[in-house]
Image (tube, helix red, strand yellow):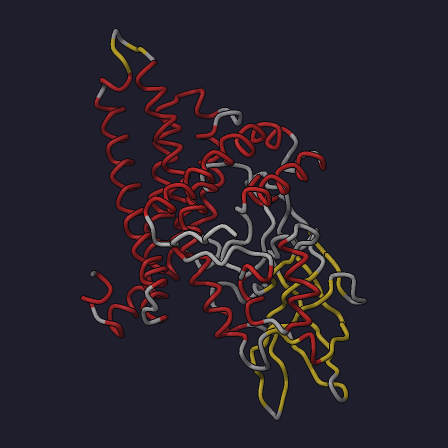
Length: 394
């Protein structure tokens, strides 16, 4: 039996990053323009090829336990792979088998029913939190789960921006469970084919991704105690862990996007001549490239530090604050980087067959989902007060 690699060994980390980079270069990037011209989805056979190759290379479901079908990665390993996934556009990495981290709190039955098949690429899950009047502030959630008998519940509510909702087999729904005169934030695993579950709107968005973010309505959906995910009243704690992880993942993917934007921009600027000189010899081009390089390098160091703290078992509240800081900086920096790249490419940068244009559109949402930049600033400011300036900056 082969010896398991030392997960902190720099050689192992370099090999994992290179393996992910090769996969992105060979299995994702070549399909970007096809996906763009098709409005998002790739042919079914191509979807299967991507998923199968990811499984073969063990680049799927990294943070989930190996016994559940994941890879038991550290946060640092996961960050390095997500960084590479971020180098591709059009969400083609969404075909890689994965599942939301809240399933770590699932019961053995839920893990068998939902998590393991998801990590084999046999089904997709979705996460339903946002509502018409409850976005970055979840305190306004009105979706209700009410007991209607021993071990039975009725779920009612409407959720917006349910990513993967149009293809998912199970929807993780945040609801306020009425129990003992209290409203307890609770996650429910809702089968997508349950009576009363419906998609009421599936509007197009700025990016062309494989799956949409539909509005879903839940009307008298019958659930049972075993559909509760992570225990009654534990929804906010589980969601906080999800936010921390996903905000760090967004930072990682933004860094990957910046790396590709800079690589392609430098290649263009070095080989394109205007006014008798290479583009890169003009300060109007070289200076923005330098600014983008500084942004990408600084963001990467910040993101890797958050991953290191996670692996070291640091205070989860400190990690939460720093993950928000990483998402804030990297998403804002990636937006600047994409805008500069479009300008450097000129008219070609405005063509949807150019990666710079696609990133320019796609990266915009990273300043919105999983908490807007304004929410991240609030989290960081509160962390400065509660965790201390030194802890947040060193």
